[in-house]
Amino acid sequence: MRRSIAAAAAVVTLTATLVACGGSDGGSDKAGPTGPTKGAGSSSTAQPAGEQPPGATAGSTQAPVGKLGDTLKLVGMEGSLNGTGTIEADFTLEKVENHAKSAIGVLEPAAGNRLVAAKFTIVETGTGTYQDSGYAEANVFDANGQGYQGKPGTPTVGDSLGPNMIIKPGERVTGWIVFEVPKDAKITSVTYLMEKVGPDPERTGKWTLD
Image (cartoon, rainbow, N blue to C red; front, side, top):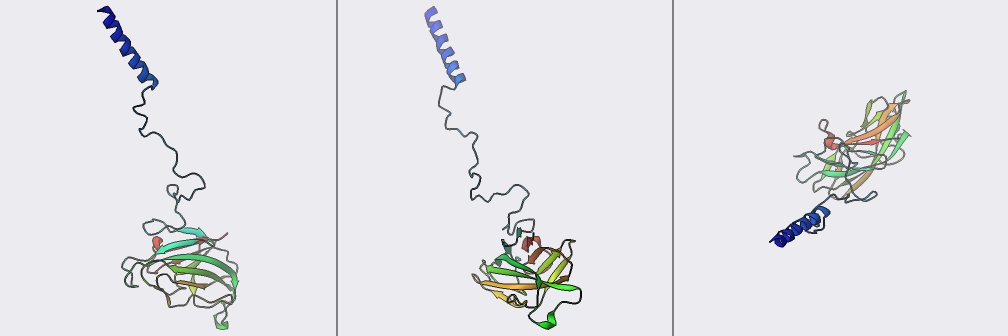
Protein backbone atom coordinates (compact mmCIF):
# COMPACT_ATOMS: atom_id res chain seq x y z
CA MET A 1 0.00 0.00 0.00
CA ARG A 2 2.79 2.39 0.91
CA ARG A 3 4.55 1.51 -2.35
CA SER A 4 1.39 2.36 -4.38
CA ILE A 5 1.02 5.73 -2.69
CA ALA A 6 4.69 6.54 -3.22
CA ALA A 7 4.51 5.55 -6.91
CA ALA A 8 1.44 7.72 -7.50
CA ALA A 9 3.15 10.66 -5.83
CA ALA A 10 6.19 10.21 -8.07
CA VAL A 11 4.01 10.27 -11.22
CA VAL A 12 2.28 13.50 -10.11
CA THR A 13 5.64 15.12 -9.34
CA LEU A 14 7.13 14.09 -12.73
CA THR A 15 4.08 15.42 -14.63
CA ALA A 16 4.23 18.78 -12.86
CA THR A 17 7.94 19.06 -13.64
CA LEU A 18 7.38 18.42 -17.36
CA VAL A 19 4.64 21.05 -17.57
CA ALA A 20 6.73 23.65 -15.75
CA CYS A 21 9.72 23.02 -18.05
CA GLY A 22 7.67 23.08 -21.25
CA GLY A 23 8.48 19.47 -21.97
CA SER A 24 5.14 18.87 -23.65
CA ASP A 25 4.86 19.92 -27.28
CA GLY A 26 1.07 19.99 -27.27
CA GLY A 27 0.96 23.81 -27.59
CA SER A 28 3.81 24.35 -30.05
CA ASP A 29 1.50 25.28 -32.97
CA LYS A 30 -0.33 28.09 -31.15
CA ALA A 31 0.07 31.65 -32.42
CA GLY A 32 2.74 33.66 -30.70
CA PRO A 33 4.53 36.98 -31.24
CA THR A 34 5.56 37.36 -34.88
CA GLY A 35 7.76 39.77 -36.79
CA PRO A 36 6.60 42.18 -39.57
CA THR A 37 5.34 40.56 -42.74
CA LYS A 38 7.25 43.07 -44.87
CA GLY A 39 10.85 43.90 -44.14
CA ALA A 40 12.53 47.27 -44.57
CA GLY A 41 12.93 48.16 -48.20
CA SER A 42 10.05 45.92 -49.28
CA SER A 43 7.23 46.95 -51.58
CA SER A 44 4.79 47.38 -48.73
CA THR A 45 2.71 50.55 -49.04
CA ALA A 46 1.68 50.75 -45.40
CA GLN A 47 1.98 54.27 -43.97
CA PRO A 48 2.41 55.40 -40.37
CA ALA A 49 -0.82 56.47 -38.73
CA GLY A 50 -1.86 59.97 -39.70
CA GLU A 51 0.38 60.19 -42.76
CA GLN A 52 -0.95 60.34 -46.30
CA PRO A 53 0.67 58.30 -49.08
CA PRO A 54 1.51 60.21 -52.26
CA GLY A 55 -1.18 58.41 -54.27
CA ALA A 56 -4.04 58.72 -51.78
CA THR A 57 -7.49 58.41 -53.34
CA ALA A 58 -11.13 58.93 -52.44
CA GLY A 59 -11.89 58.01 -48.84
CA SER A 60 -8.85 59.94 -47.66
CA THR A 61 -9.41 62.89 -45.37
CA GLN A 62 -6.50 64.92 -46.69
CA ALA A 63 -5.29 65.97 -50.10
CA PRO A 64 -2.71 63.62 -51.64
CA VAL A 65 0.71 65.29 -51.55
CA GLY A 66 3.85 64.68 -53.59
CA LYS A 67 6.81 66.51 -55.02
CA LEU A 68 7.90 67.54 -58.50
CA GLY A 69 7.86 64.47 -60.74
CA ASP A 70 5.43 62.47 -58.59
CA THR A 71 2.18 60.95 -59.86
CA LEU A 72 -0.95 61.47 -57.75
CA LYS A 73 -4.26 59.70 -58.32
CA LEU A 74 -7.31 61.98 -58.15
CA VAL A 75 -10.94 60.88 -58.16
CA GLY A 76 -13.88 62.85 -59.56
CA MET A 77 -17.13 63.67 -57.84
CA GLU A 78 -19.83 61.10 -57.25
CA GLY A 79 -22.62 61.80 -59.71
CA SER A 80 -20.14 63.60 -61.94
CA LEU A 81 -21.50 65.89 -64.65
CA ASN A 82 -19.10 64.13 -67.00
CA GLY A 83 -21.62 61.34 -67.48
CA THR A 84 -21.58 57.63 -66.69
CA GLY A 85 -18.62 55.69 -65.38
CA THR A 86 -16.04 56.45 -62.72
CA ILE A 87 -13.88 59.53 -63.26
CA GLU A 88 -10.34 59.14 -61.92
CA ALA A 89 -6.95 59.99 -63.33
CA ASP A 90 -3.23 59.89 -62.63
CA PHE A 91 -1.71 63.38 -62.58
CA THR A 92 2.05 63.87 -62.90
CA LEU A 93 3.68 67.27 -62.42
CA GLU A 94 6.53 66.95 -64.93
CA LYS A 95 8.22 70.36 -64.85
CA VAL A 96 7.87 73.92 -63.56
CA GLU A 97 9.23 76.89 -65.51
CA ASN A 98 9.66 79.83 -63.14
CA HIS A 99 10.33 82.41 -65.85
CA ALA A 100 8.09 81.39 -68.74
CA LYS A 101 7.48 83.39 -71.90
CA SER A 102 4.17 83.62 -73.69
CA ALA A 103 3.99 82.36 -77.27
CA ILE A 104 1.29 85.00 -77.87
CA GLY A 105 2.40 88.58 -77.23
CA VAL A 106 -0.98 89.87 -76.04
CA LEU A 107 -0.86 87.40 -73.13
CA GLU A 108 2.37 88.74 -71.65
CA PRO A 109 2.15 89.51 -67.88
CA ALA A 110 1.31 92.93 -66.53
CA ALA A 111 4.04 95.25 -65.32
CA GLY A 112 5.61 93.94 -62.12
CA ASN A 113 4.51 90.35 -62.81
CA ARG A 114 6.03 87.30 -64.49
CA LEU A 115 4.72 84.05 -65.92
CA VAL A 116 5.16 80.63 -64.33
CA ALA A 117 4.29 77.47 -66.28
CA ALA A 118 3.65 73.94 -65.00
CA LYS A 119 3.72 70.86 -67.23
CA PHE A 120 1.23 68.09 -66.42
CA THR A 121 0.66 64.60 -67.79
CA ILE A 122 -2.85 63.26 -67.15
CA VAL A 123 -3.95 59.65 -67.73
CA GLU A 124 -7.65 58.76 -67.36
CA THR A 125 -7.70 55.50 -65.38
CA GLY A 126 -11.44 55.28 -64.73
CA THR A 127 -14.27 53.96 -66.87
CA GLY A 128 -15.70 57.39 -67.73
CA THR A 129 -14.54 60.31 -69.87
CA TYR A 130 -12.88 63.17 -68.01
CA GLN A 131 -13.82 66.62 -69.33
CA ASP A 132 -12.44 69.80 -67.76
CA SER A 133 -11.17 73.26 -68.53
CA GLY A 134 -7.52 72.30 -68.02
CA TYR A 135 -6.06 75.54 -66.69
CA ALA A 136 -8.79 76.77 -64.28
CA GLU A 137 -8.34 73.79 -61.92
CA ALA A 138 -4.67 74.53 -61.22
CA ASN A 139 -3.06 76.97 -58.79
CA VAL A 140 0.44 77.83 -57.68
CA PHE A 141 1.18 79.11 -54.17
CA ASP A 142 4.00 81.33 -52.97
CA ALA A 143 5.97 81.22 -49.72
CA ASN A 144 3.34 83.46 -48.08
CA GLY A 145 0.49 81.10 -48.94
CA GLN A 146 -0.92 83.35 -51.65
CA GLY A 147 -2.48 81.39 -54.52
CA TYR A 148 -2.54 82.23 -58.23
CA GLN A 149 -4.97 80.47 -60.54
CA GLY A 150 -4.07 79.13 -63.97
CA LYS A 151 -4.96 81.34 -66.94
CA PRO A 152 -5.40 80.89 -70.68
CA GLY A 153 -2.17 80.98 -72.60
CA THR A 154 0.54 78.98 -74.31
CA PRO A 155 4.17 79.23 -73.18
CA THR A 156 7.07 79.07 -75.61
CA VAL A 157 8.25 75.81 -73.97
CA GLY A 158 5.32 73.76 -75.29
CA ASP A 159 1.61 73.32 -75.92
CA SER A 160 -0.90 74.23 -73.22
CA LEU A 161 -3.71 72.12 -71.79
CA GLY A 162 -6.66 73.41 -73.75
CA PRO A 163 -9.79 75.01 -72.27
CA ASN A 164 -11.92 72.07 -73.46
CA MET A 165 -9.89 69.10 -72.27
CA ILE A 166 -11.48 65.70 -73.02
CA ILE A 167 -9.72 62.49 -71.94
CA LYS A 168 -11.31 59.12 -72.65
CA PRO A 169 -10.54 55.99 -70.57
CA GLY A 170 -6.93 54.94 -71.09
CA GLU A 171 -5.98 58.13 -72.92
CA ARG A 172 -3.08 60.41 -71.96
CA VAL A 173 -2.60 64.14 -72.45
CA THR A 174 0.42 66.32 -71.70
CA GLY A 175 0.51 70.09 -71.65
CA TRP A 176 1.41 73.28 -69.81
CA ILE A 177 -0.65 75.56 -67.59
CA VAL A 178 0.33 79.22 -67.26
CA PHE A 179 0.13 81.36 -64.12
CA GLU A 180 0.75 85.08 -63.62
CA VAL A 181 2.55 85.92 -60.36
CA PRO A 182 4.47 88.86 -58.90
CA LYS A 183 8.07 89.06 -60.12
CA ASP A 184 9.50 88.48 -56.64
CA ALA A 185 7.12 85.64 -55.64
CA LYS A 186 8.81 82.40 -54.59
CA ILE A 187 6.55 79.57 -55.79
CA THR A 188 6.56 76.70 -53.30
CA SER A 189 3.73 74.41 -54.46
CA VAL A 190 1.34 73.55 -57.29
CA THR A 191 -2.19 72.16 -56.88
CA TYR A 192 -4.78 70.66 -59.20
CA LEU A 193 -8.46 70.25 -58.26
CA MET A 194 -10.22 67.68 -60.41
CA GLU A 195 -13.72 68.73 -61.54
CA LYS A 196 -13.60 72.11 -59.81
CA VAL A 197 -16.92 72.76 -58.06
CA GLY A 198 -15.91 74.20 -54.70
CA PRO A 199 -13.03 72.91 -52.56
CA ASP A 200 -12.70 69.18 -51.99
CA PRO A 201 -9.47 67.75 -50.52
CA GLU A 202 -10.16 64.30 -51.93
CA ARG A 203 -10.03 65.72 -55.46
CA THR A 204 -7.06 68.04 -54.96
CA GLY A 205 -3.48 67.02 -55.59
CA LYS A 206 -0.59 69.06 -54.20
CA TRP A 207 3.02 69.02 -55.33
CA THR A 208 5.65 70.75 -53.19
CA LEU A 209 8.67 72.38 -54.82
CA ASP A 210 12.17 72.47 -53.38
